[in-house]
Length: 206
Image (cartoon, rainbow, N blue to C red):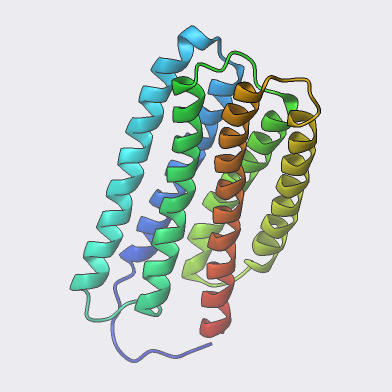
């Protein structure tokens, strides 16, 4: 463990925890949109936009703090990277919700629900892991499980593509649903990037 002889700003830990908490809210709203009738989705989409704005503010707060702090708990480049990756997760989930509403998709295939289930679990694990940055302990299980879940998400995405291109749907519907699925797949990747960044930080600090 690296020893530090100078004071450091520990508020970053709380800010990362707050940022990850927004992801849990976003994943829950995404799950609600999946099960809601089309006429109720606009209101949920508005809530998702509000959650995304709140997440953006958390990201900006981290950036402002790192720019004004002389001493940081770990490397500045890693703080920037982690904040950016967390922000990407929320942006991509919000984009998926926005597309579902804008495209007026009535019923989404089961493969999309499988992707959302993976994202909800990833969000929970990420929120649980962020407070542990303070001690840098018990984080390995987090990034290992996130990697496993990302693989599950990949499989769900591939199976969804098989169904979309099976001839069951018309071409326009395929394009709409694939765009939603692509955003969800990118969100899964973004959560993995968060875990990879945490692993990098933990290795440097060990």
